[in-house]
Picture 1 (cartoon, rainbow, N blue to C red):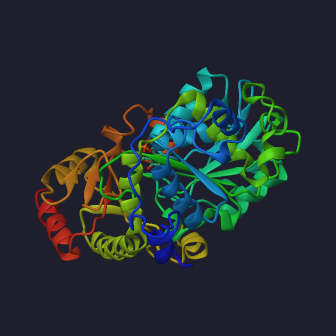
Picture 2: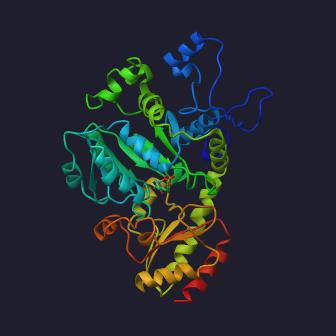
Picture 3: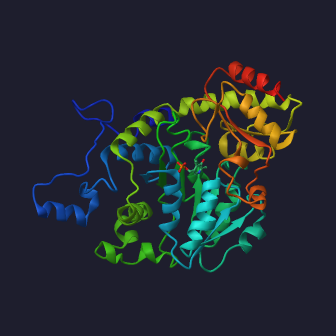
Length: 421
Ligand SMILES: *Cc1c(COP(=O)(O)O)cnc(C)c1O
């Protein structure tokens, strides 16, 4: 089935007389007839539900939907996008390991990878998203366990070179993990281009309505974990009665370990209510993405004509450096986020932003409403000047997330704000 249909139907198939809409199961626990029945479920968690710290039927319905949209074997939701990034790494890296990441990634992920994981003894080796094959290969060490990148980077708007990153990862026997938040599976299906694990901050386009923070991890089921580099997956887990994930769960080894070990221990699982809201958002994802792209392209063309603006960065523009990749991996559609760099520098960026009336000034992106943010003074304020440059963030850069208002109203708002400069 196509995306429009999957968005509405995948993950939940009511039987005779059951609710049409996926019901909200708001329950901590699941009841059984006997301790023997509970023991059975502990032995094989696919037989039933145990506890809502790591599973819930409403959330599992939306996990099935996202797995179908991404073309993966299974998915697991998390309480935030940050948690999805963290678990995707912790599931395969431990103290003494390293992994490689494109340096053009979300600022929160940079902090997590460069500072917090470092304290836990896991090293992140950053490479430029546009590095060549030799530079990427040179970053690998014997202890490297993964390669990470964002389909469309937030906020640098670089587009991942899937061919290169997947090839290098696989040549070194490690998975490619892709954060597909900005593209969504509607514009790009990273698994088709070699990604092994796909993650999202569902707080963005998937939820779409700015009602709840969340994340998801999708397992492609394609990576061979049994190559000697991943004993956590291919050797017995003593905390889980000696189970060998690759043996018992095959293609779903990664996601089962993520749920039954990491999520069990960390407990960052969404509630049934959150799962319901996320599902509601995704029902219209495909149709919303179409309009985000259409509106953003018109707004990007308008920005190009404004003398106050030095640079318009939007991967959906044919003149954009990344357009060839957008054509190759995203059917030519650039999603809804535009970065502009004002000629007047940081102060002009501030005045422009503060003068907008329709666009919300908020720490968010990919909302249904147009919203705007100045990363250098907000989301990326923790980063040093060098890190800002590495992350592709100019001090005068304003991130403009085009919403679903009528595009003429969005442009009229920009026009009046630019007049204030
Ligand atoms: C927002 C975002 C995250 C973090 O997600 P939260 O849901 O805010 O924790 C990760 N990656 C990208 C690309 C994002 O835009």
